[in-house]
Length: 478
Image 1 (tube, rainbow, N blue to C red):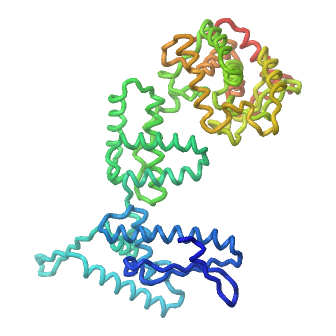
Image 2 (image 1 turned 135 degrees about the vertical axis):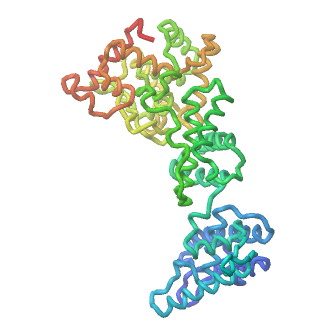
Image 3 (image 1 turned 60 degrees about the vertical axis):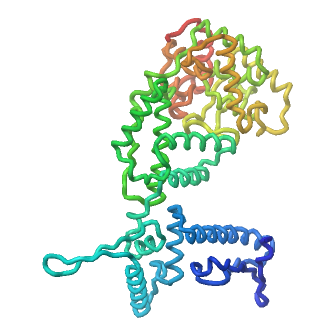
């Protein structure tokens, strides 16, 4: 039925409200025949928008009650919500405590009465203690929302509501999607990675508190045995995903436990600062001959992919940093031509220190000028490379550049990839004995002000000199 059919308007003040009959099979649990809720607006379009939200909540509650009536266990978050609804319906939820002492006394009496009725309905086992007193053990159904409601009254909800691995994963993906604001393509990829990592951990109906620190270490060891070709970076990514899922569950469900995955990734001291990779397993650089052949082979690609590849070679930038440039990020009419690497709507950057200005040198400068002259953009906010400055475009250009190495150059070494141009630039800068803070300035690490003491007050000019020398090198340390 259309949402508009649930709208009603008061005759006196003209405000809209939502009114919908509660299905007959849900009325005993719901506690009423009709759901009424003020929408607090006189505007019909706004009333429709608010009614849509209320209607979604109504349908969700109907589905929850029917699942409960069927005898199936509710998901943890729905079980908590149903428990709260029970207490609010009875007028005994802790948030409903009255302000006056007399009313509060009656409120606590109603809580005690409800608690007594609940315990009377619970299966019990009795016996006698050695001193003649009677002991009683309650066999409560912990999957029931009434059990959760009783736990809320007793102030023990947090210790009792533990999500399963599947519930924790779903909750993490929902919360993380709201915070990260990824494109649909990237969000889909992220969800695939998360579910793949979680699926390797165990059954989804396992409560997350079943995973101890010992089990976490055992899982990491199992991953290493099952995937002998994984580098430490790949293993770290899997552990980081699990750590994020558990951290989210601990926070959202207010669990009194620690995250068993913390500290299981490769220590920072064993990683290369400029590339963020494990020093023992990082991708290698191009040799001088390989780099010359790779740059020559780029000529066989389409113009946009070729320019992205050249930018990566001459600046050491990441694939996404080059492919995600906007037209306004290219400044060729200044004293020192450069690109501005910034966060934008096309792609994010790895860290806030990745924000930087990098000079353009050599033949790439003329190539970019010619490209911009022939491709006039309608807006400075338009993608510099429309073919790849879109959702999923970075994967496409990465695959194309990787194909140059594997198919055209016939290099099968898995440690040589398009991203190796970044490692190559790092090696070139080291060969030139470039100060580390300048290396970070070029590659996107360290603060923006670190190079301000170079180049007579023009840090970009100094960086340009460094990159010109790097481009002229015919050998570098590997």
